[in-house]
Image (cartoon, rainbow, N blue to C red):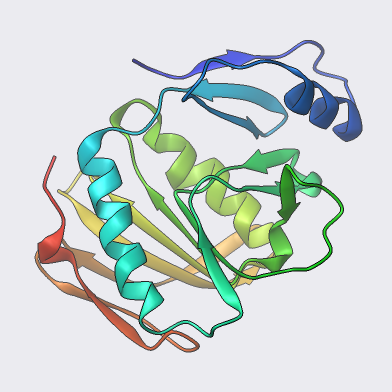
Length: 194
């Protein structure tokens, strides 16, 4: 199943979009995001997709500070890009006080991880990294199971404006290093292939 886009009015404000997103009753188990001002409803990620995210999450826990957490279903807000995005993994310090229970400001994230799905890989390759970079998130790990040259993981960093610099790429089967503050090597050979 592919993603469905829903939008009431292309001229609606950020606050109106967020109210619409928070107020609707979406299909249970679906992933509902606002991507470049358009509400997008996607089916829950598939099994292999979840296995990859779980393996990365397990490795990250071994190197994170105690006051940080890994979130799998937490939305992060990027108002400047009209984005309410739900990465596969968000690593962020735990906050005692947030403005909303439904999301956090994207600038709080230290690392976001996206694992592509065949139907909406473009969002993970183009729209989402532009929003994450614009928010100043230091590191973005894209695990692209459907990359044109074969499955690969690419780590992006050094955000400037809405652009990241690619730091390193590893084909599935090769290790990829996540730098400080994580200082972690992830073995992509543990990832199931499409």
